[in-house]
Image (cartoon, rainbow, N blue to C red; front, top):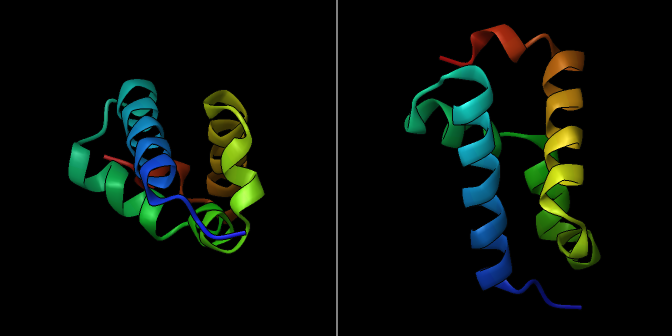
Length: 75
């Protein structure tokens, strides 16, 4: 299944917005975190993952950041 880039764009924006809200981080920092995440790579490879809800995907992203010890680096 091909990646629907409109949905991917929406998902990235939603994740960035949630990072900014939760961590009071800048847009640039949040966008960098999302685009450099394993979750983003998985979204590009697995179009079915884009069908999951924003909250679920955000939880996956936060879990990844915590596991990598990057949660504190978001500014």
